[in-house]
Length: 374
Image (cartoon, rainbow, N blue to C red):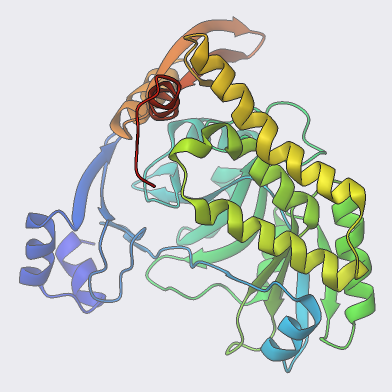
């Protein structure tokens, strides 16, 4: 299908499409011989994160609303049963076959060379896409050795794993109905997020036990998926998840917005109030430690002239994808250096360091006694 036919079917006129390209609301890209367009600003029905190709449109993966009070949030949202799944702490991707090549797109609609390289470790992509050529597999890459997310599930101690959680199809913004989705997952043996079954809003005691179990085990939270089409998917996170988010981000507190931290403190307070109706001395200690210790260590590094860095290891199946990942990070304006690259067994192990210049320079300015207005 020609690109002009694709956008026409989406209800977008050619002149409207060209104007969006001219104004950089749509960006043309190429990866491994595959051409596509990333949507940066909404055009017609296509929101930011959508991808337009000659094979069809990949609609953006919708943002999921959050509830902070479990019982009341579920009662407000659902009149019919809903499925409950684990929310895995990783980074969101869409897996698709375009022009005969399997590509993995980030939420921002970039092809991720690392994820594209590794997806064949987890999915029988040829079998799946031969049978379902228009399928879009939505999932989460999670683990300590990834380029985007420092935090990871406790049961992935090294490298990465892939967890499918939704299915879409090209040229539609609707997810495949949940019962059919589960059937396809099982038919092809796709690794998925943990599934807890079907519940209703009256099952609050059982749901509280699930979330407490996940919190104790170090998991991020749960996602609620409706059986009634008109009702929304929702998410709810654990107390521990809020603290871990703060801990891994606090080293860069100087360049972060304050809302990032206040939102997580509010979520943590809401969780403790609903689940336990009290705060403990350990809660105070834990929150103080994850807030103060990381930024204190960044101050110490800046005072000693040491650049603040985040180090990560990536494993690649194919050597050419190492350079593609380096090019991708440069395109995304990430300041980094490659520390080492070596072949170990079947994988290329590449160690990177992300250089956090902004935090370093801000803290250096404060340490130098420069006055500022806040």
